[in-house]
Length: 300
Ligand code: ATP
Image 1 (cartoon, rainbow, N blue to C red):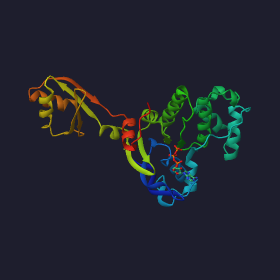
Image 2: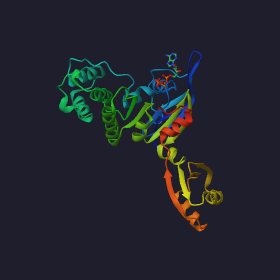
Image 3: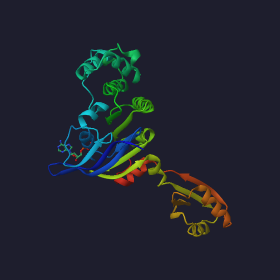
Image 4: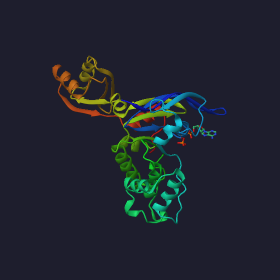
């Protein structure tokens, strides 16, 4: 798969604070790429660097296979901070001001308003918008000029669940139109619903990156129970694809390799004369994985 962005060994310090410590990953074309991490992990710093707002201390990054940065910037729409829209002006007039600053015409404004689902409300004053609509307009402003890539920093910050759902749907529909989307967020469950790929940062270190499915699949667990749990535990030690067996609450939890799933476990147990009373594939959520990786406590 072609990369729209390749980041190699990026580092950045603010005086004694190492905000990024040699971060490398590729963003595949057509992906929704989540840059995840708790507060202070370096997400905003990384976005600032790839958008040429901040200068890295070390490392390199290249857009679109090495396109000069000034040219590449024309293909990238970004939303790092909520723009200062005028409350008493309409959505259309607000975009008119933004578009004028960027030299974009009326066609583009209308297209963008349709894209973010605000065309019907184009003449409503900004102050009458819900927070979700305001954020959609901000994303609209980033879409002026038909960028191929959209970079969003915490796009659902401060939104209620309905607003979060609106942005999620918008991200999905923009991605279906072919736009690659890079999102920094700490809202893992939201990211899990919308992202195809993730990179997880902790205090400036890249802990992991890859396709969401690969990240999750490598951590699946198979749960089993049988009448004789001791015998079951003994027998399962002989199944080659089982990496770890753990007994918790009268259930055996098996960490398996990628070739071993519920059917392999079931067939093996039957071949050993054991009938399972419980067999379940438990996929680890990205949040669980994230909490493990970053040693953060899951909020109550
Ligand atoms: P958040 O989710 O809180 O926005 P983040 O993951 O985006 O966090 P950054 O804002 O990139 O992380 O910050 C990374 C580290 O760099 C933090 O320790 C932060 O305090 C520090 N930092 C960021 N900007 C500055 C600055 N201008 N001056 C000094 N330190 C900074």
